[in-house]
Length: 115
View 1 (cartoon, rainbow, N blue to C red):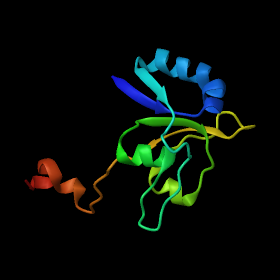
View 2 (tube, helix red, strand yellow):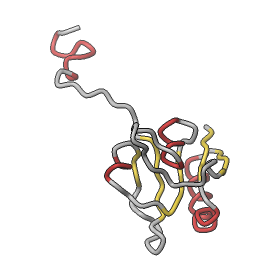
View 3 (cartoon, helix red, strand yellow):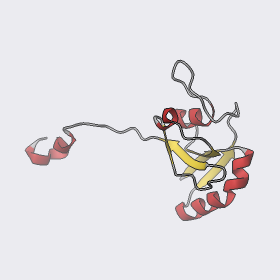
View 4 (cartoon, rainbow, N blue to C red):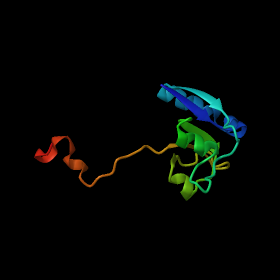
């Protein structure tokens, strides 16, 4: 399974051991790169993200490692870990999975006699 990691030079230095531990434990490969605009991510007036958040939301990256502030706006579109390096606030984040919400989900797959 291959994953792409987006990060900055600071995050590479702070997270190299964490990244190696994750790779060894979860058996995945990765590529490290910086996003083109070099930003962490902000939303424009049309609701489009740039930077790290934009790469995650668009699917061009699977996870990001960065000293990134958690905001309510960002939490709407990506999942954050708790900071694992408190002095910098570095976190691991990924796009939130698309989930189907339904009050009648329990009725799927033939449960309770419904097809």
